Length: 416
Image (tube, rainbow, N blue to C red):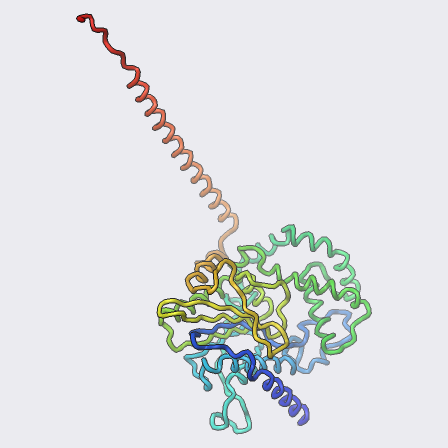
């Protein structure tokens, strides 16, 4: 057991050394940082009926972070510390950093332990290099920002409708033989693209941990990966799903930047949102910057607010999405926003996917909405025809008056 912990801390130390000196951000103009990141490596969420391996091989339980996953989050914390070491304070200041997580077992303690590594005088125990920091959550069914399980009837209706879109329907039809094969071999009922993603996730993790996969998996794993990636493309395929799923967090990030630029939150420097691969995909889809690949472990989306001069701010976006932790993040560009993308332009473009009243849109009856739309169209057509008729009457009246004027005849002069 002693050697286990010794090796764990040695590995964490090695990762920490790697991130030092790389990817440091020039923070001269930086005013606010917001990020959403995925957790690190975890055990499979579920096993399939014919799985030759059982849950006991995962010491922390199914769905829980592994030692490697905790190391990933610790390394992310060190990377963030190095990138923003000239921006955020070395010591934890509650007014500076706000941390929000989904209401599940979360990796933030590992992340924050590295982001705020306490010196010995600050430790509550000399041999415990950890500083407790607050993490905020909301019930999954009420979490509009980070959860994918919100109670929203319109989302469910739109997901059902999405299954009938040609791009989804064609892929589903072309995959029927694969569905049948996977159902037969795995013992699990596979009938949808999402079912394939869940099964692929289990197989991928088992392979990552050198667990022997059944022979039948070897030829189908590439096709399963393609469908797994595609499943993330369709979590918010339609504009309505972008509004209902990605809109709230995009609106929240926009509000945070607007408040900062206005000088209303002078001490606030960072917002950290811990979420999941699906949540990240939704956000990136909503912003139009998704690369159509399932977000890897510890993927981090970063949005920075910079001040250009006294009255102008601009926005920069980045993505850290690979295991090469020493690499700088990729810069992303909001479609339709010229570089540098000003805050006003960013807010204007993203406002198209931010609902004004999420609850009202979610609970609006679809038939009522369609009826209201049809009524609005009918009224618009009636108004147009009325105006057209009025113009026609005016035109005819003018023509009649003009005709009457030119029909005057001179009276014969018999006195000449």
